[in-house]
Image 1 (tube, one colour):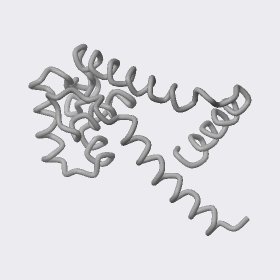
Image 2 (cartoon, rainbow, N blue to C red; image 1 turned 180 degrees about the vertical axis):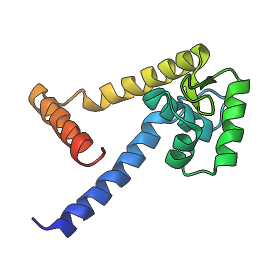
Image 3 (spheres, rainbow, N blue to C red; image 1 turned 90 degrees about the vertical axis):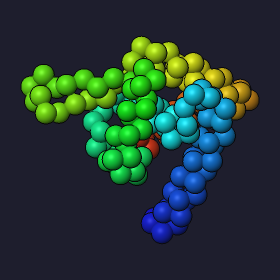
Length: 142
């Protein structure tokens, strides 16, 4: 196995993944939020509850900027801070009911675009793709 060639395929795959993600999520966010705020809500929706530091690390933004953007999202009633019952110093971020509704609608539009992309793929190929995604998730993106 040529690991350098494998790495080059991985780089190409991740670049394509970013491009397709950008295309599929284009115009799905509310006009009331910025692209960064949408990405934060998307991350929270998928991994909630999350800490401020987890968001900061994943989004590659400073803790003060993360805190400021979360405050804006909280002011728009799209996310809530929940204090950990066992460690009252720790706070988790979750989507509010309004944030859940917004992200459900956004994910619905993305799912529709995804369905269009895979409409021509056979059932057998879809199963292969699912298996490949499972392997990537467990072996590379853990």
